[in-house]
Length: 114
Image 1 (spheres, helix red, strand yellow):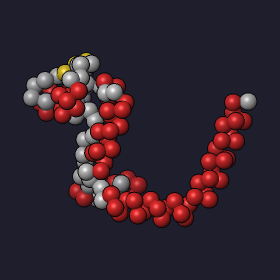
Image 2 (cartoon, helix red, strand yellow; image 1 turned 90 degrees about the horizontal axis):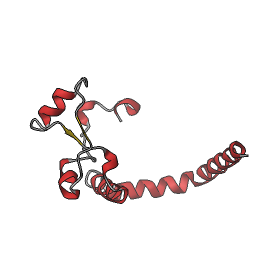
Image 3 (cartoon, helix red, strand yellow; image 1 turned 60 degrees about the horizontal axis):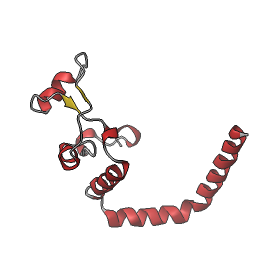
């Protein structure tokens, strides 16, 4: 949004969607590693986590749980009715273009495979 559409950073709200402390606790995720000693963000990370240098990777989440949690996080920050309205307009206007592009992609992939 900031880079592609010149939305000022102060107008954006960053929402962490994974891996959150809530997910770590909810799914009892096993620690994967520790903050790298030479990382430039190590001190910030350890400080932000109350002195805990334990690291959890996104791969620690079961894919189905990750997708469900991500969908919930997205739905909590968007106007779902407005999104659905825009998606319906987009689908009606762009379906022929998308179908043509998909056909071109499929043909190109077949050429690469063969």
